[in-house]
Structures are given as structure tokens and as C-alpha cells.
Length: 269
Image (cartoon, rainbow, N blue to C red):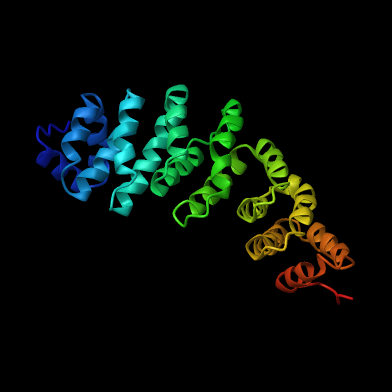
């Protein structure tokens, strides 16, 4: 067993990497996790990364999330990423206690904290917990319209994780969100639909057909990219659907672009 008794000793053990890191986390988690994290916070970035990993194991989610809120805004990218994943671990382990806290992060004026809320929502996606699908989607929903560069990719990744874990629930949410008039929301909807599993491809095409009517470039570009991705899963359904789009003046440009990228098996009229 590791017996580091000072922050310096802890960091030395952490730097060894490999299995020693796992043993270190297990041993420290048996003690006062919050006290160790607070001691590590003022130190170097490596110590703050360790603090984030340690806080993911805290039995006191509210107090741990208070410290993680600071780490989620850290100047070090790896520390920020670790803090967001730790928040997701706490959400998974202590859903009822952590969920309201992450709701406040979602409404924070600080983009990095909103980003962490999105990352946590995706990290907590568990196909074995279908009861959590709806609340996780609700947690993410207000962030769909967030245009800040820190938040948008985190929301996209979280939607992908939720779609993978809860395909039917997430698909129904995407259908509802496709009625939005916000181009950022529509871009997220279109992008997520590109990950539809084979049984949902034809239904995804119906929703993409609706989104294709927007005149906003980001959403239209997302529609084309998703059509190309879906064609890798179900080429016949996608190509047949796009040929029908060719008869529609508003959708024809997107259909031709997508068919060009897919590689049309026969001449397009």
C-alpha cells in the first residue's frame, strides 16, 4: 500500500503513473478526500489534476462539486477536462444530490462551467439507467442554443453519448427540438441524427428533411454531413430518400451535395 503523508509524497506517487495511480486514488479515497483536494489545489497543475480525479470518488457530492467548480475553470486544459469528468462521475454515483448543482452550472454566466455541465451530462449516460434519460436530456437542453466556442463541442459530444445510451429517448427529444427556429439548436439536432443506429435511420431522414428547410448555413451543413454519415450505415435508404429530395426546390441543393459526397451509384437526373 502507498503511504504518502504529504502533498509532495502524493504527487511523487502520482507521477509514477500506471497502477500506482490507481492504488493512490483508492488509498486516498479511504481518508478525507476533501481535505486532500484542498491541500492539492494551490499546487502545480499536476496536483490539481490529481485533486479532480480524487474528488470524483468523494462521498460528499455537494462539497466535492463546489471544489470541482473551481477546477472546471482552471487555466490548465487537462485539469478542466478532469474536473468535468469528475462531475459526471459524481452525477452517476449521487444523481439526486449532484443533479441540482449541475443545473446551476448550466445557468452560469461562465462558459467553462456551462461546458462542464454538458460534459457531466454525457459522462453520466448509462444504458442501464433508462430512468435517467429524461432528466439528463433536460439538463442539456438549454445549452443547445449556447454559441460559445467552449460549450458547443461539449454539447455535441454529450448528445452523442446520450444518443448511444438512450437511442429512443434521445431521438424523441431531437424530434421535439427540430421544431426550433434557433439555428444553433437545429445544427445540434442535425449533427446528432448522423449517429442514428440502423433501426432509426429512416426516421432520422424524416427529421433531417424538416431541418433541411432552414436557410442557416451551419444547420444546412450539419444536415449534409449527417446524411453522408447515415449513408455509411444504410446507403440504400439514404440515397433513395435523397433522390426524392431532388424534386423539391428547397431541398435539392442539399440533396445534390450529399449525393456527390456519398458517391451516387447511378446518374442523378
